Image 1 (cartoon, rainbow, N blue to C red):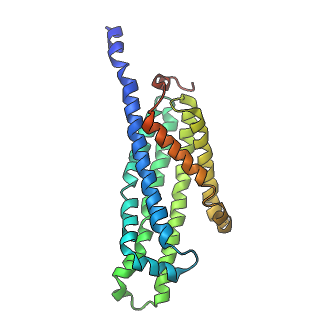
Image 2: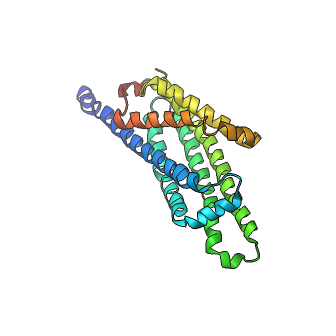
Length: 247
């Protein structure tokens, strides 16, 4: 009876892991696409570095685009959580403690990022409530709006520090399990270290941070895209290795 049980149950596990990996990959691609739209298409086109007045005018003239940026950014945090849960689930048999810790880091990062999004609505709130803010000069409103956007960038940097923990731990689990090519695991660890360096530079030396970005984040983005595409197209390789910790 035990042999029959094993013969029925074991073939289903690899298929389940592959399906789980592909769903995680698709969700990951959604997160990457949403992030690129919000950061490059919206904020990248409307923000004028060092010029609060020009930035405020650009947002006022393109309110719909700015709203879409916030509207896309907030919902894509849902597939971000799904991605994190599924990816950590792939490795729970390899090292349960590391997998759970990776999930905690990732969810903490998403929560910090979600809270930081409130700052991006400040420019819109000032436009909507302009009649109630007559005590403030136009220059003050523009400066406040610009500062709020800067605070989002800082909050996002804090979120990436938590996400760095996720990257390092998932990279370590990839190396131990071999469910995914080990080179991707090594690159994920490197990506996590890059995120840490970026956030610490943002706090300790903003001038250094300006020089590092986007150069330090470009290879990070390529690493995450590689993981997302591998999960989507290939799923996982040799799923049975997930049952052998440290292998």
